[in-house]
Image (tube, rainbow, N blue to C red; front, side):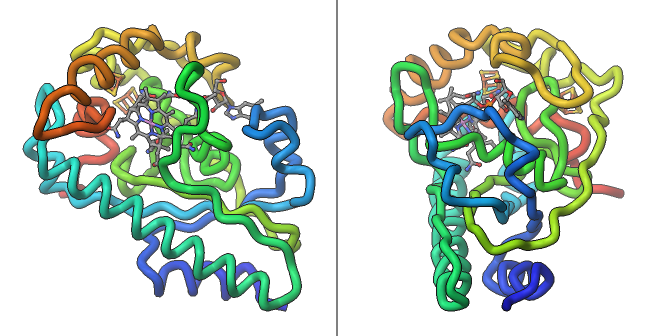
Amino acid sequence: MVSALEIKQKAIELGADLVGITDLRRVEGIPTLPQGLLEPYTHAVVIAVAITPDVFEQIRTEPTPLYLHHYLATNTLLDNINLCLQRQIMNEGFHALAIPASQIVDKVNWMGHISHKAMAKAAGLGWQGKSLLLVTPKYGPRVRLATLLTNAPFEPDPLLPNRCGICQECQEACPAAAIKGASWEDHPQTREEALHFTRCVEKVNEDFAKRPEIGKPICGVCISVCPWGKPKK
Ligand code: B12
Ligand code: SF4
Ligand code: SF4
């Protein structure tokens, strides 16, 4: 059987910057669409692709057309890596299901099939910061994520602690004043615990997505200001 190390090496060869593995017992009770999505699976491989720091250098208070392009291209790369890993695991006789990087399945409640942030946290890639984004020690929140569900019994990775500390950069910079500044050791119970959720939803959908040169619900400000993402000197 293909080992956790081999699948991680393959992901890196294909263009991933980070890869982690979780046992799905770590996310028991997490909401999914459809309900019961996780039932055939026992583990997940979570991949991250970093967006170059130069894109974020230009983001101060709003998204840029350049960020839009990198956002779209990174989603495609993540989906392609995930499809290749899916094939490799299936060829070994296991089930595997690539969850799309950025598909919104329920536009009333703003949900994907599963939260990649929660899966990435459970796979030891980082922690969910005060912005609710997945923050990694190496790239901060400047990563996009995708999840591959499987029943291949890969060895899970150790968890990382929350390292936001007293930082409030994202809270201070958010153009919608949406970040409450709450902290938690593991994860918030609801999105509302971390965010004035509708303020963020309205900002990205009613303002940024309606700009002709953007056209998607993106923002990037809370990503750009996080000190963990700034290039290390
Ligand atoms: C719908 C969606 C949106 C919506 C709603 C956002 C939201 N916060 O839910 C809108 C359009 C507003 C949006 C905005 C943004 N998004 Co968006 N979005 C998604 C999408 C498609 C689904 C998210 C989802 O289903 N959330 C469901 C909620 C319930 O999950 P959650 O936010 O993680 O919070 C809960 C869980 O984490 C849970 N939890 C954690 N661990 C555990 C364990 C257990 C056992 C349980 C029960 C619960 C639990 O606790 C939290 C509270 O319930 C994902 C892709 C994906 N499939 O994940 C991208 C995604 C979350 N978005 C992303 C990004 C970058 C953004 C923006 C910065 C915009 C941009 N691209 O510039 C903003 C950030 C807003 C913010 N501060 O959160 C990235 C995040 C990358 C990262 N480093 O974290 C993702 C992962 C896309 C990707 N492929 O990388 N987004
Ligand atoms: S995505 Fe923009 S509006 Fe939403 S929380 Fe981050 S900075 Fe605020
Ligand atoms: S900007 Fe500061 S508070 Fe916000 S997620 Fe990054 S480290 Fe945490």
